[in-house]
Image (tube, rainbow, N blue to C red):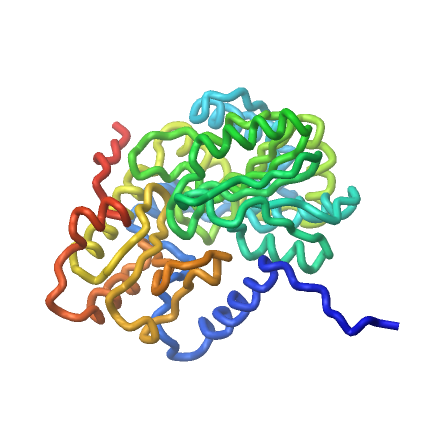
Length: 390
């Protein structure tokens, strides 16, 4: 006979209700401007795509065959070289699992948790809502290992003294903030002491505003760390699907087998794009795109449309408090990210020019740019220019 008591729902799962609501609102005809949206228009798409911008994929590859992404040894080796160059860490083909987008790899990882008997994991908030959804649907309990987010002044790690699996997101994407190096150093020491496995969702990595490439998460113990990287986000070309997982050598085959049986092969166009993106990450870079993001940020802050902002340092999102009434827009506030405080702050997509223009147009008149003191504490762009490739 039941006791009548209900088990408390993890706060991570309560966050999903907000995401489900905004998805319904986003699809309403003639709805409000969505300033927190996911897409990212920019003027460099054709340059980044190269020949893919002009030629049909069937002229570049045999479309009568499965594209067999994971069997592409040249691609896996190229990705390994790229990370070795960018991060100064030894990655080889045996550490690379390529795939068609981050979501499929998140699904493979959570399925791997399930089939290997993991019913409880730890995490550092925030995590991407799709991961939260998968954990909820698969019956895996997420236990927070911190009460605040890594970029906040009062952040404290609460890691368990046991072997477990920890999930963290770096950077903290909604605010464009890296997880501080000292936090990752503490995680690495804990991994070595407990033998724990860490999964890093690095979907928004390699987009630094200061032009200094290399990710601190690459220094976590390689044989106890999985890193998710997304060239699609790196180039803000979301119509192609490309991502890869950097994995311990012992886990590559089991994860690759699970992934191909869950998702099958990608389209040949995505395989071609994966090569193109890896080539750009190796040689050309995305400095023009990052410069464009910062130009949009300067335009927004100079307009006086913001009352405060969290200091962004990477990616294409800003977490800020607009001066305009928020009910005029569709926007994601702190509750979408399992974040306390930050009254009136919302995520702003700096590649959504229509959203930026709407925020500027709706702002009350008579306000100038944020004062230097506010900008320094809350997001002013005082960083040096992004170096452009020769």
